[in-house]
Image 1 (cartoon, rainbow, N blue to C red):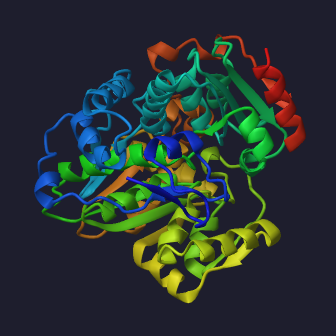
Image 2: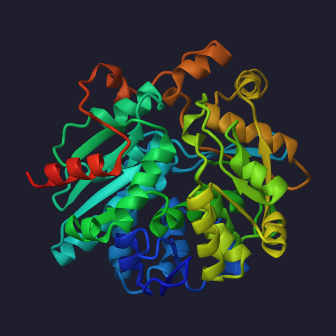
Length: 462
C-alpha cells in the first residue's frame, strides 16, 4: 500500500512513513493510492464481532507490511483496552430509525480517543523498532489535544507539544491538557483562535530546517492514521442496523472534516452509505461551501460547541482531491488561493461531485441549547453541545433510511452549556472526579510562529 499527497508532488510513501510524516512536504495530505474494498459477505460477517476484530479487518489492508498481523492485533487490543464500554462505540436508539453512536467512552471522553489511542500504540511500536525520537506538535480546538497527551504521556521516544487557543476551550478540555505531570508533554496556550494554532502547525511542517531539526511528526487530523482509525466505527454501527443488506445514513458534527471524511472512505470501501450529512454550528463554512460552491473564510465566533469553531477545515482538502478526480495540481491551486486570499471557488464539476456525496445543515446557538433540552426531555439522552448540533441536523435530514448521528463527546466535558440548557449538571466519570482540583501546568505564548518554535527547541534540548 502506497500513499500519495493531495497536491501531487511530494514523495510517495509507505504507511509507516506517511504516519510518521503527517503533512506531506508539498503541503498536502497523504491518502492511499487506491482504496481497498470489502465484499458484502465480509461486511455482513462483522455482525456481533468484538470492536477489535472489526478494526483489524477494516484497517489491515491499509498498513501494508509495516506490522505483522500479530503486531497489529496487539496494537489494536492495547489501544482500546482503556475504554469504559465493552462495545467501545455503542448505539443508542433516539427515535424511529434514528440512532446515536456514542464515541465518548475512551480515556478523555471524546471521539478523538479512537484514533489517538491507536496512533500512540502505532508510534510506540514503530519508534521502538527504529530507535528514533520524534517531536509531536498538534493544534486543538479542544479534544484532539487531550487525546494526544493521554496517548503519548510518559513515552520515552516522544515529546508532545499541543497548541490550543487561550480561553477558547472548556475548563474540562483545558485541564485534561494541563494537569498531566509527565515531563514529555507540553500544553501551549496560544493567543488567537484555533485557526491560529492550526496555521502555526502547518507552517512548522513547511519550515523544513525546523521540521528536520526537531524530527517533527504530526497527529492532528492531517495524519492519515487518524482518519483510518475513525473508519472502523462506521462499519460496526452500520451492521448493527442492517448493513450491508440495507443502506445507512450518517450525520456528523464536524469542524475539521476528518470524522465525516472517514465515512467517505468507508463508503468507498463498500459500505452502503446513502447520505453523509455535515452538521455545523454558527461557524458554518462547510455548510456555506456546499450551498454556494465557494469556500470563503470569515471570522470565528466563539460558541458553546468550541471544537467546531473552525474556518480552515484541513481535511476538506482530502474531499477536494476526490471531487477533482485526484488531480493534485487542481487541489494545490485551490489551497494556494485559500492561503493568499482566504477563499477559493470550486469548479462546477467538482462542486457537483461534492453535492452528490455530502449534505449539510447549520445550527444556531439557541437551537443547540434547545436541542439539548429536547433530547433530555423527549429522548432521555443528555447530549454535549456538539452532539446536539448533530442530532438537530439529523432530524432535518431523516428519511426511511436508518440515520446514525455521531455523539462526539461526553456532556461532562461541557458542563456549563449542558446545565444552562437542561438544568442538569453532568458529572465527570469517577476516574476524573478530581480533575478540577488538579494542579495545572501550561505555557502562554503569542500566536507567532517564531515564538512557538523557540519554546519547542528550548524544551526538547533539556
